[in-house]
Length: 140
Image 1 (cartoon, rainbow, N blue to C red):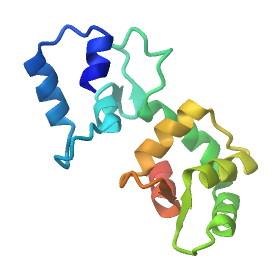
Image 2 (image 1 turned 120 degrees about the horizontal axis):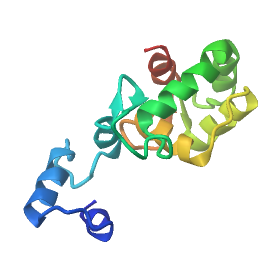
Image 3 (image 1 turned 45 degrees about the horizontal axis):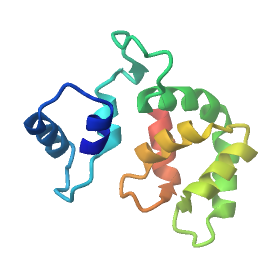
């Protein structure tokens, strides 16, 4: 994250960058939790009206709101499709399988939206999506 901030020439001191990175390293593992950082730029799941580039930058909250409109009417068929791809029968599918399930159920999304959505839903960062977490997030 520090490299990104420096390459984009954010007007932050080294100490400020370090503080920012520590603030979003919840597990003290050196990983920057991008989704929690981006949530600061949303208001009630919508892009903040104060962001001058808001209409050009999809944020996690914006993607979640957009997906809710697609998913709610299709939740039953999504559930069946999810179970069909869940070979281990453990309630999880890979991100690739998740994308395919969405596509097959009239909920196709862009790669960027998939990234935002999976980053929000894959809290353990193991590359798997839980159907229950997905539906709960869509119904919030």
